[in-house]
Length: 317
Image (cartoon, rainbow, N blue to C red; front, side, top):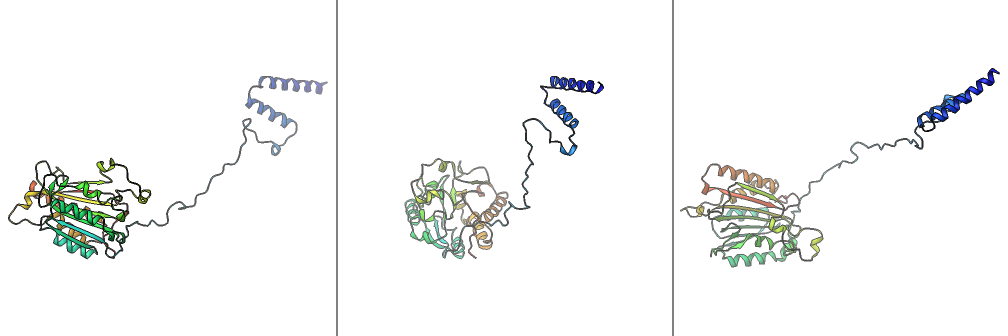
């Protein structure tokens, strides 16, 4: 009778658990565990318990080898500068006392120099257009142009000094990839010394450096169809260095050559193993030092705008 009463008690207790905990997963799990232990299950035979309807799987963690995703060697990308000659160097000097040293400098660098003196505005435009269409560019690795003249804030004059002059943007467009496809992908270097009137023509700053296309060029019309379009932007690979100085520097009894062009020649001649951007930065420093010691009308103002895609060294050695 005692055993029978105990069994009845256990059954009643079990019914109470199932009734009270029917809606509680945690209590249902505890009850099931108690029931299985009472039925003789050992600890080793217990199934894994956890929240209902969730299957636990081992977490797989990838093992990353040290340095597996780091480049072993980063190659410095440079423009190819191996052709002989390196390219055409066009010099247009409408002043007459600034470019002899630059002619020797670019000859020593390996350029074929074309030197023109005292041109009219029409002559400047015609020569630039002819040079842009020269077939020699196909076999050359670069092109350089040096312009020295009086001018306005956005143009250069010839010896006739017409009011409008040749727009600087017009000069640059002649050598863009759609107008001059033989120079597409190759560095196009422009060094311009412009002597302007001081009234509102010179900016009140020493330098302004801009990477990328100008605002006007960014808003220019869509490019004409051509094979170069898919690879290189029409305005890529330009190095445009513009220096403005007061025209009064030319009016003295013994006008000296441009400080800007003199420093440029010195850097290219002696330090050609440095990149062109490094050389121009050093040129900026020299011009700044000069400006800090002289009057406003003796200062030079340098602007650099470039769209180079690689490092550029003006030497194939």
